[in-house]
Length: 130
Image (cartoon, rainbow, N blue to C red):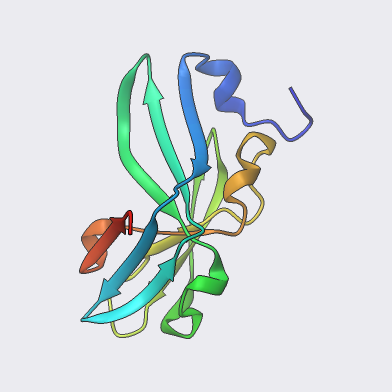
């Protein structure tokens, strides 16, 4: 393990997080406006002892997000596998609707500085193969 390894990996060796290029177009809308649109999303899947922990999460490059529609908040959380998460709210919308790992643990560098949206805080997150 590296010097910046997540402590969860040693404590829960049967926990798995996989990341890969999503290979689809991901579009996120809020109040009818496209907030994010990318073909460069990273798909993250998380399982523990073969059981899905959370639905697939798409992490989106900032260049493909309307950053001017987001407001940084002081909210933070910590994940023993990914690291410290920072949050953004949608302007004129829900608080802490978006999270990011700006300095993730070494195992999760694939999602560094990418943005993920809570599905229940936006209108839609659509992944299409076309």
